[in-house]
Amino acid sequence: MLILASASPRRRDLLAQAGIVPDLITAADIDETPRPGETPEPYALRVALEKAAMVAARYPEAFVLAADTCVALGRRILPKAEDADTVSACLNLLSGRRHRVHTAIVLRQPALSCEKAQAIRRIVTTRVAMKRLEAREIADYAASGEGFGKAGGYALQGRAGSFILWLNGSHTGVIGLPLAETLAMLKGAGWRPDNSAPRPASSAGA
Image: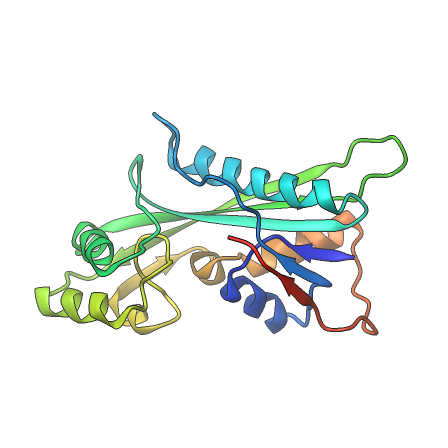
């Protein structure tokens, strides 16, 4: 059984591109606020580990896949935008600059008898350069709502794709789940798809 510990439709859709349909999709209700002095990569890994641990505690006999994406300017963690003002603030910071997108992937293996379940982890970092944005472009994008709920206030797979000058690393990692690396983790952990499995049910979560 494979559980995706994320309510993100982007991660679900990326897995679907590879022909993977989780048996269950459920979100982990954890506090994603960065801790004082926490830097981007450790932050992304901590959050992904906490998501996986919370869901694995409810489903100890399943494979649990969790991820967290963090947009960073140097050591600064940009927020997940929840409104137009935050989108505008993020884009003003990113405009004309290079930044990094860190996506941490955690795969919790099933607990076997008395053994402790193992957590396989990886961080995939992608460098991104954004063009210099005009004030009108930022205002229009913020008003569109596309950046809501997105780390750094933008969605690479949407209108903001036209803001990107170049990208070095994982395109799918910036969207929310580095697909090649995730598939390698699943294969290495011994998970195999069951083509006869029904489509997943989603459970409520924050």
